[in-house]
Image (cartoon, rainbow, N blue to C red; front, side, top):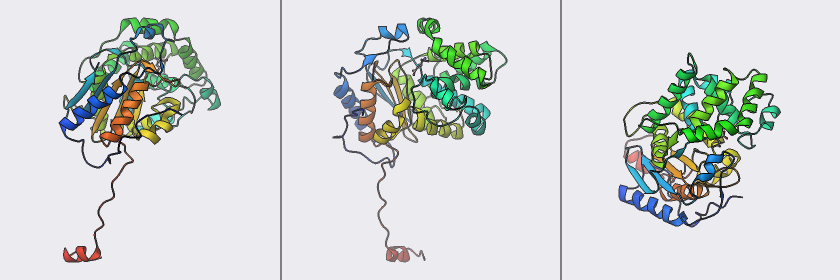
Length: 345
Ligand code: GLU
């Protein structure tokens, strides 16, 4: 069981809005200070370049749906977005093709198995199962309508940039490092092809997927991107509508069930938020109608989730009242008070 270490923080209910700016600033700083010295976990190295990350990096950003940012630590350090791209590419594809197509073509159920599992595909008659595991993400990327590979890539990069509110750049070193070593993703794409589950050529699909994972973002970018999902698909900083409210809703539902690898149930139980993490150490956690947390710290647990990032999210979920499931009872209204107001039962 993962220790989220926020049991002593009182759970504020999710009703209403974020606390005041000063309070959020203080709580973000407190969460950062509390976990900044934690040294558990290991930096990912199965993509060789990721091993060069400084394990001490730790950035925490909260962006509210009014566009206000609250930040602590290394929120300006760029890192590759990795699996977090899956959430936003899914949002774009869902927005383009609709709820039913992505549901049928990819699926929406958790595999309960690691993100790069081949067995999960085999156990499910070739279904990639959901867009947050590698097989499902490759299948989802392949669905994005475009005339050719360059156009598909432009659409992905421009779409993720609109979520971030700035033009995102490809980290060429990460792209090359991952392209040389992503044999397993190539195998997954071939497996999907053998089940007739891939809309484009597998080499092109894996290349696009590798590029999307190599886009460079900061913890601040993740918070803005998440806050766009929290704000019904409108970027709260630029004011641009990126996707429809329905596609934002569908993306958040998927993140709640599948966003945190095989720890998604445990995460939802403890933290109560749709979220997505990536092996470079990023996490985005979204509180619909309120805003989002962007966290970055490269030390990971065995499932691939940033340890400091998870703990900071647990802290902020409680202290800021983000947990979707934490409600306050409404005061009871007595029948006589209703009668006094002219309401009859
Ligand atoms: N690009 C990485 C891979 O395909 C993403 C993994 C992750 O962040 O979960 O292995």
